[in-house]
Image 1 (cartoon, rainbow over the protein chains, first blue to last red):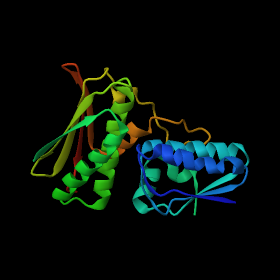
Image 2: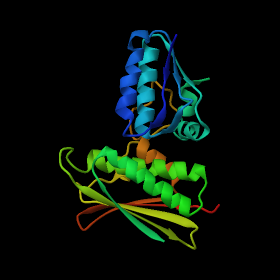
Image 3: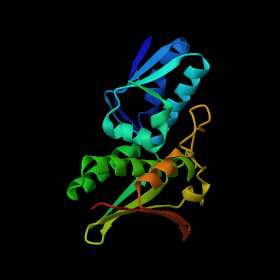
Image 4: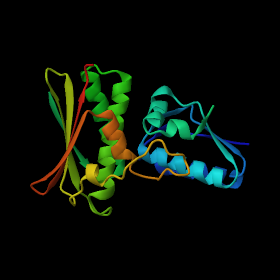
Length: 90
Length: 140
């Protein structure tokens, strides 16, 4: 089990910081990884792409990615793009 | 009402862009959902220009115009840059939201979100400029 906390807005400015943070998961890809998004106030399409890539990497390694605590307006962005069905939520 | 914002082709400009949109939405009394979504639309449109219109190592600007129409029932934006011709509507790949994660391609989501949120999206190339116009009804 590995939990990574994403906070603040996931916009183009903060994208690289978040990518850097997600590297914490590299040694745990075959495991259950939770992205705790309780404090994530915003997401743009580049952020969604990072999450999708992460999901692909974790799944390919036999692990499971869980997205936790999405704020309603952020969840709406996931739903608009069909990502609502792709991820496991908690 | 009409407002204008000049932005450079640097992702750090998302900061002033976001302030501009929030201030605009505030003055029109728009709710947090609409403000959030318009912020997203403009970030996607501006990021597209930053990423694709100009070489990354050159400093250029783009102009964002915002105005209201039909007795403030519609908010309209026009984003204009002098970069290489790029029609984001035509060149955006198809996004199939019903596919599974494994099948989903990484990309094309920005313009897809713009189309989802806005009621009217149009592109034209005129006088050496890319001009993207986006409108949304703000009084349901």
